[in-house]
Amino acid sequence: QVQLVESGGGLVQAGGSLRLSCAVSGGIFSGNAMGWYRQAPGKERELVAGISHGGITNYAASVKGRFTISRDNAKNTVYLQLNSLKPEDTGAYYCARYPGGAQVGAADYWGQGTQVTVSS
Image 1 (tube, helix red, strand yellow):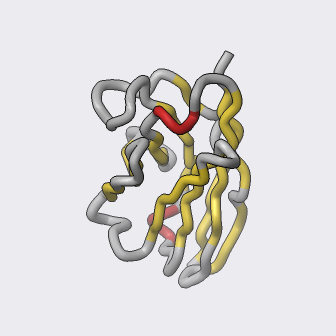
Image 2 (spheres, rainbow, N blue to C red):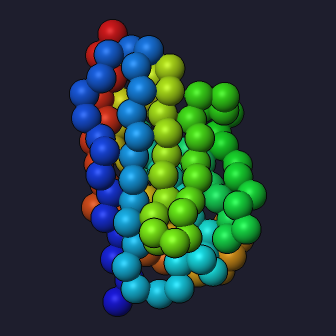
């Protein structure tokens, strides 16, 4: 059974930083692409950043240059560093696993989410 557990969310002032972590158990972590999504109140869930099994990254235009996704295969953990946070970054952040090594198709496992709130 694959499980994803996020941590690191919280309340931060605009311009501040947070580091989200997603610990993955079950499966073979190093073989899967991973992604971070977020959902703001009243909005659809959107992809924020993704990383392939080989470390190739991609970002939503709204976060490029401010957020950094990374992975530590030895720790079965994927991270999302959030810098220069804006109030519009507020939302629930979810970690997701893809079935293969690239971000192709739909994610097959999701974490429970961690809340990020950015005050102005």
